[in-house]
Length: 349
Image (cartoon, rainbow, N blue to C red; front, side):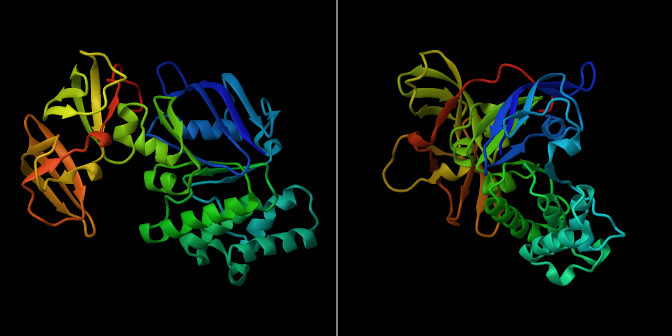
């Protein structure tokens, strides 16, 4: 089954946040993560697909079938909420079996299928416990089991890991990916955690102001952002306003940068983007894009060191495992990507 959204539009009221002309598709067995700042529309998108809100324009199809006008139950979607929404008076087994009860499955069969799901989630020993007796990670696995037990057409995840501490979050996101792959189910995953999105998604959608800014694989999103907003939102980035002043050269606040300018004319305004980990500590003979500077902030992060260097009239962020004294830095021309300048502001930014 797949999830298809075409030119979807929705607004809560005049001047309020919503969605504008959103189009995306989640293929069978694919996990698509949606990220963006607060108010960008990612939760609204999930509610529209789930049927909790009705679109004002556009089309939603599930498994190739138009879902317009169908209530949430008729869409046959598995949903895992941020707070898990487990019934406190029910055991883990009864919580997982509940969707089957609603669908008229007999008691013996639904308990057997619920037991199988709990076994897959390594929770058989907790089948008779109530949610209050389970850890946060166990509750999350119960909620995921409940969402999958009736073999839904697709799976919707609404920030399912936000209630977990950092130590358990990494393990649980791997668990979600493992289960999702096992079932081969199209999954739309809304999250505020970029690391979570990049680590488990086949593709990632970045939203801003109700619009899709980019829809790409995690690697393409990071290495080849579509615009300044995506570059700055996903991970860390050096973003320098500049002007193409000669073939192969852009003038910026830190000085002239040698880079590929073939897609731009002389005089064009651009944003020079390069990732902090691409910056090298200068060693040996002088090369292009070498700059001396003064360290403004130096942060020790264990395996990583992140520091800011004042260069010319600008600042360069550097990430390295080296603990050596920094005399100068180099920016490889191949690490620089030229982006279009920002031309407008959008809500949710």
